[in-house]
Length: 126
Image 1 (spheres, rainbow, N blue to C red):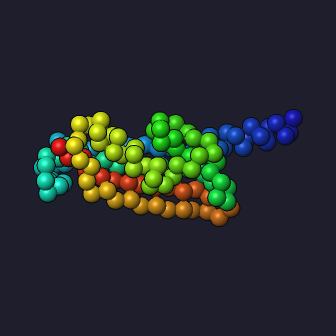
Image 2: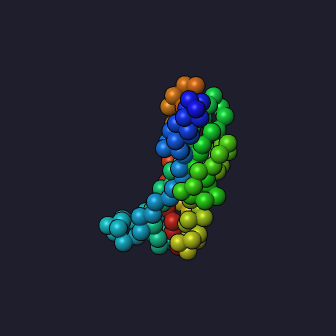
Image 3: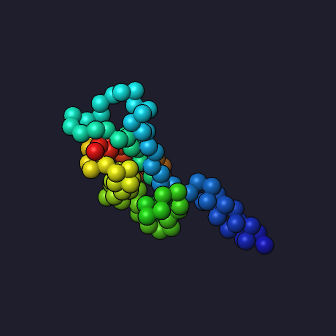
């Protein structure tokens, strides 16, 4: 019984702190008239985030890049290669013809059990 309670506690802890991928959109009307690109009409500024839990270098729980908001198990999705398609797909969804000024920030916190996070921002332009 103690082992079951321990395993349930570990599972609950993992789900509580599970990874998450998301994309936030700031539409052009909320940019206060700022021109966010040298060419084209601005549609929105995009910001995508993803983070996850790792044991050594093994991904345990990360954000699902194929379904933002869901959790991926044992998939390494906290990297630029996984997140750039997410932000460009959102840009295309907003009818943008270009996704410009991509910038990313990557961080790691912890030692044996640690969390990784990545933030990517871009401008959607038509």
